[in-house]
Amino acid sequence: MDQTPAILPELKSLRDSIDNIDAAIIHMLAERFRCTQRVGVLKAEHELPAADPAREARQVSRLRELASTAQLDPDFAEKYLAFVVREVIRYHEATARELSEKTAR
Image (cartoon, rainbow, N blue to C red; front, side, top):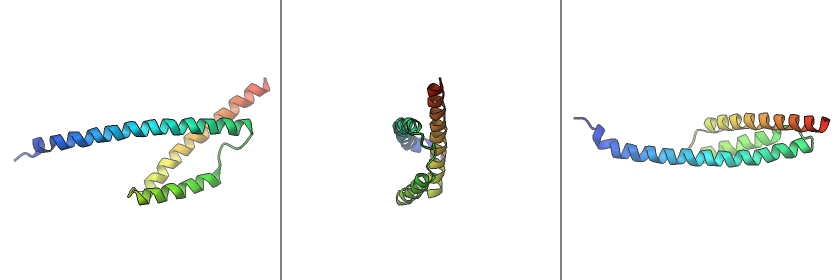
């Protein structure tokens, strides 16, 4: 006997929850990047390096611990952070270049 129709309401409910969570994640990432963009401007204005390896190492440890507590694979959390940090550093470097070009004129 086909059980597919019986699971459809639960499947739809779970997918709706996933969609809501995805939307919340996007909004939270947007807010995070607004903060890191301001950090990039401050770093550029004060000629600080785009990357901060000591902070990044602390963040890796912190997120791995949070992931473990939340029963999420710590390796996944670290990969997520690595991706985010790469994007943030790319933005910080671009911001520093733009500020440098403006002040050179």
